[in-house]
Image 1: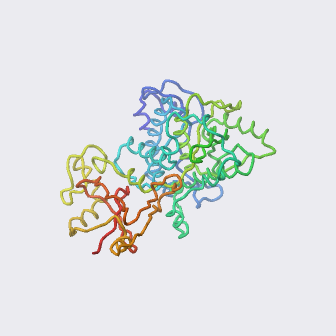
Image 2: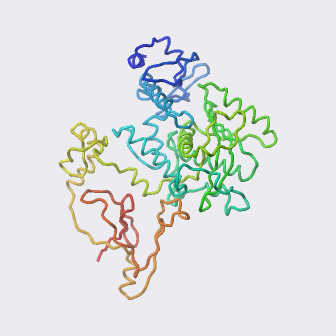
Image 3: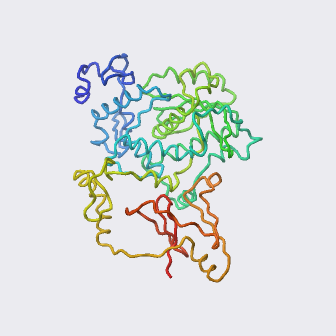
Length: 476
C-alpha cells in the first residue's frame, strides 16, 4: 500500500480498496473510477498447497512452490507494476484482449520456446518485449506464411477436406527431429508451469484442429482446472495460404474469476442454446498457457486488414477477431538471432569497455561487469588459460573428400534436425556433391569470439548458433 500511495499520492487507502484497476488511466493518475469489488493479484501468483488441511487452506507461489516467497509475494511492487502495464495497454488503440504479461513471464515464455535468457538479465523491458514478439513470429514462420500486411484472408481460398492435401490436424502437428528424439528419450518432462506453456499452446491448437477435422463444432472454451480463467473461441472460417498452409480465423474473448463475467457468460448462454446437438468442447489450458495464447492472438489481431469484417453473433460485439497459424519449435537459426544483442552483455546499452582478461564480452561500466561476473567467470577462466591453435576445415565431409581424391563423384545432403518446417523451407535441406561443394561461409563474426558446436560423427562437424558456418574438421 505504501508503494501505491507513493506512486498515486492523490488517492486514499479506502479508494485503492475499491478501485477498478482496469479502468483507463491517464497521466499516471486516475481520472475515472468505477466502484466494484477489489481485484486480487493472488490468483495470478498463488495456488493452494498440498499441505492444506480441511478448513485451513495454505497457499504457495506458483513459480517456486514456496509459502513465504519474497520475490513472488511482494504485493506492493506487483500491484504498482501491474497497474502501470494496464495503463499502457489501455492507452493503446491496438485491438486485442487486455493481458498483463510481466518481463519475468516473457522470459519464462521464451524459455518454453527454447530461448534461454537468465531471469536476472538487465536487458531493458523494450528489448525483452521485442525478442518475445520476434519469437512469436518465428514459431509461426510468419514472414514465410504471410508475405504482406495488412492481412486480408478473404482473398484466399477456403480450406476444405476435398481440396486440401492433408488434414488440418496434420498441418498443426509439427515438430523437429530433435524434439521427437527428446520425447523418445523422456527428456520433455515439464515441472514448472511456465516451462511447458508453449507446448501447451501447440497442443490446444492441435485439439481444435482435430475437432474441426472430425466434427461440425466451431466453438470452444479453454479453461484451467480451477475454473479461474477461460478463453471463449468461435472459429469463423479456415482459409488456405500458399504452400497449403491453413489459417484459422476466429473470434475470442476472455473470462476470469476476478473480472466482470457479463460478456463471456452471455456468449456461453447463447451458444449453449444452439450447440445442444454438437456440444461445446472444453479444452484444459493452464493460466500460463492461456496468457501466452492471448499474447499470440493479440499480435495476430493487429495484422488483420480493417476491410476484413466477418459477421458476428449478438454476444460477440466485444470479441476480438484474430487468426492462428501452425506453430512449431524455434529453429536453430532463429535461436541464434534472438540470443544475439549488441552493446553491454548485461543490459544492452552502449558499451564502453571489454573484459580485460579475455576481451570477449563488452560492458557499459563496472556495475554491469560486476553483476555479470558470476555468469561470465567459467568462460573467462577457460579462455584465459586456453591454448589457441589453427585448424583446417572443409565444407565437405571426409567421405566426399576421399571420393574426390579417388576421382569418384559422391553426392551428399544435410538436414537440420532443429528445423520443423522442412517441407516449406528448402533452405533447411542442402543437396551437394564433391564436384559441387557448399560455398565457403562468410565471416559474419569478424574478430569477435563466438560459440561453436562440434558434432561427433565420421566427420566432426562444426557450426555456430545461427548456422552461418557449417564446416568439417580436417585431420589431414
